[in-house]
Image (tube, rainbow, N blue to C red; front, side, top):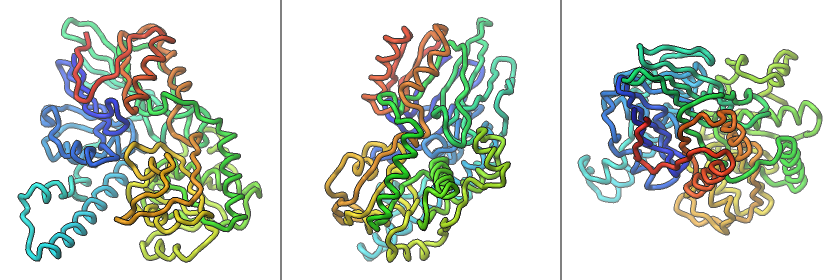
Amino acid sequence: MKIQFCGAARMVTGSCYYIDTGSAKFLVDCGAFQGSKKADSLNREAFPFDPATLDYVFLTHAHYDHCGRLPRLIKQGFKGRIISTQPTRDLTSVVLLDSAKIQREDFNRWEARAIRKSGSELDPQSEEYVSREPMYSEEEVEDTMTRFEIYPYGNSVKLGEKLEFRMRDAGHIIGSAMLEFWVKTEAGRERKLVFSGDLGQPGARIIKDPDMISKADYVVCESTYGNRLHKSRDETVLEFLSIIKRAQKEGGNILIPSFAIERTQEILYELNLFVENNLLEGLEVFLDSPMASKATAIFKMYPAFYDEDARRLLEKGDNPFEFDGLKIIESAEESKRLIDKQGILIIAGSGMCTGGRIVHHLKNNLANPKTNVIIVGYQVEGTLGRRLVEGEASVRIFGEQVEVNAQVHTLGGFSAHGDQRDLRYWLRSFGHTPKKVFITHGDKEISIGFASNIKSELDLDVCVPELYEEFELK
């Protein structure tokens, strides 16, 4: 049995793990690389395996860095089944359609500029043209969605005589899963593989806590925040409220770059509680993300996936994602009109400030010292969000250098990822059963540091694989 790490190896994005059991071939995730020009190049490379030979793709959740290359996989020959939970299936459709639309619009803008500049039609065989073409279309996304098969948490499912799987709640976003596999080898022995997916924080407001798993022969574990401890949720919420109230007094705008899935819903949930408990008054809040609005509608469809607190609010008749003062922005024209407003809070994507409407709001507001930018999620190296977190005095947006006079706050406690303590706790549940633990989905230094930490503390055989590295699982 063989595993190859085809993404998220000594980096955060591009999750994709190839497993060949001898009797079946499958992927766990098929995500897009993000954050740099190199990421775009990696996305367009041929897969290091033949997609036509794959039987399945098991999708842990619907974030772009876990599902973003699925249509490309199908274009290159994949004819198998994509297995996930129902919320993951629904959210993946939103994410991929949004990606296809953005790719098409970006390409059309580039093509129009290039034709004006050259004064003639472009060569579609040229290297630049090919590198700019959309990776897939909306129609190809629709085809991708027909390949899904839906399963609930907790049920063990046999896929033939030699492969069995079970999905467990990863507590990351709604519908997110960790995966257990039982594989029978040619010698008749059974080996168990476990993939953490992205592990959430215990105590999150909407999502249930991650499940614990007691045994495995091989474990693949994420390490996004393997080098730090989050502030407690209560501390984070109080800091969030304090920033908003101070910004209200100063009269500046509050910008929250937010991932459309989970993070936006968490922020809306907290703002709802502030308003309902009279802790916040007179603040106009604009959700300026059509994708987030669609994701929120999907969240509303699956209350069975909520934790007790969120379900209790629903039972009282309180929609946790709606409150007085919230306005939903749909059109680009409505979004542009926000430029004339002051003293408002804008939630917009993308979460790492790599595109979308938040970039326009940052361009219009960063130079104002009364502006507050609240970072509520992980920022990949090379992204605009990362440069803001690192305190750069000016940043380049749409070809212009923009001074950063705004106040930039980082609230790690809102992260949908567990911290070092949470990851250690999850790994400790396996005891000493794993023959090897693979650490992935983290910046290089973080993954290596976390691996060293758990190797000494938990006395496990730990490895941090390189991109495309293969291992025989004996």
